[in-house]
Length: 197
Image (tube, rainbow, N blue to C red):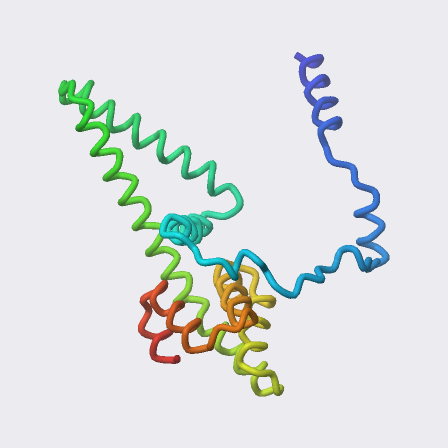
């Protein structure tokens, strides 16, 4: 038993990342010109998006609320809902109709997606006053609306910050503030956002 634990410990040591350059950069705060992004325009933003691309962007925005392991959680929920539907209809109720399993699995996936959408909206409502305060301080300091929205996106480290960063990128691309803010209002369907705009 001790040998097994020693082997597992050695394997864990081998798999541990050892990046000495990262440690040096951490202590000396080295800045390299290569690490900076010199892209002024995101070419992908200039092309018109198809319907499935818009849908995938919306779905991925709602799924990102789960965090860095969101794909794993969605896969486990999908597998669990499929297994649960199969077990309910084939074992408990003894219906051998595969369409019932498919329809109930799709229903469970829809319920899960609605839950994530509501969770994202609640998180937005919770952090929106903080974003407004940061934006107000940026505008008071003399920044324009575009710079203030981008500043909020760079300052806040959550999904709302990513959304503000996306709005700032759209403003940098040349879209009018009215169009960008109305699109954000349609995405969140929140009265406080629509009212503040």
